[in-house]
Image: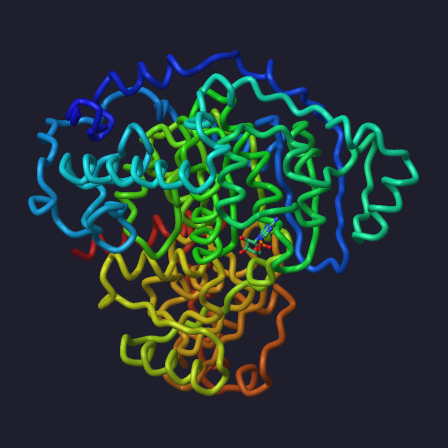
Length: 534
Ligand code: AMP
């Protein structure tokens, strides 16, 4: 049967909200045996990258002020404005713009979310087709693995009562057997009373759907980082973990995140912060695979380089897990009214050791648009550094993408006209090059002010030539007191001395014109005399 009401239309349906609330089984914090306040470090074999999964307390997260900055709860409140009727047929739906949700059936704009599967669909027609496909798939699966019959779909109740307990097999192992195992697998652990590693995914006692998803993704046995991290994460402890690329770190933090998010009624409950858009997309793909069929589990991707409105729209759909890059997240915090106060888990994935984040970009200022384009091209060609140009001919969307690219470490060099000189409080660059000296000292100060923001050190290099000769003395006056090096050519320039002399004369004149106690009577007398002559 096809029930139009069950399609979630722009979240304006209160039925949705009710069904979400109805599925909440236990008050937060009751289910997980949280062991907060103690940190665990996990290392497996060669260490190269670092992650910090699972921070159960929002106060201890890196964004303590998120909650305060944003008001409206994402899980309540219909969208503003009149509601459009739900599209009946796929052909009446438009095609998706880049970054917008895509219908799982026909590939058009996935305007709605199917309430049965949480997949994106474009119309009632595609929802019906999608449900048929899902049913067929399930039947085929049952035929191919008869032992699964009756074990799905997962009841929300089963998932919501999850508590991690060490499996009897693990409990029965001797301490030296555990140590031996860790040594053989290259697992090294620091921290107090760290729970034993699991050896099989079955030892986690996951909900059946999750076990099924793991098998479907080809995860037969956990990798070493997963063996140690998953049980520790499931207990709600803070973790700093490090392991080789390709060693399964993503699932190592995603599995505890999914379980925790299942227990939370407030959305969003988890934030995964990654340095790049590509990484965020990969993580979301894996999260969707693992969450498939689990009740109330949705993800949103908040990344730069893709249109913002669809991301904001999806963020308001009671999503449990946010996967974001820092630039886009800051943008959304600044301009949206979605409450992120429910976030209990923060995962910094490869943020801590991401070279790009620690390598601030170079900002080069030039005086014209053509100069910006040409110099940016030349820099990229000659140095191989990822470079782009910024000027008034760039559209608003292009400018925004460049700024986000700068924040996310996508560009190593940005060559800009004065448009980037002001108001970029968030961007901290390591080096500013004034390839062309700006036409005023005021603008110069704003441009060099892009370095060393947020208490960091930075360098500014300014090229000057005779085109800016009228500013020589001003530059020297301003820069000399900072202890910066000034070239002898500037200091010995006749222009500089000329300007200095003129300024001194002007100062003398000003002093002469100033009214003081000593010259007051003279001024009055002079004034009287000139009046009487008239
Ligand atoms: P990652 O290190 O998280 O990027 O994972 C590398 C690849 O290994 C990804 O394609 C994962 O899907 C896959 N993977 C992660 N865990 C397992 C596992 N336990 N068994 C098989 N493949 C896995």
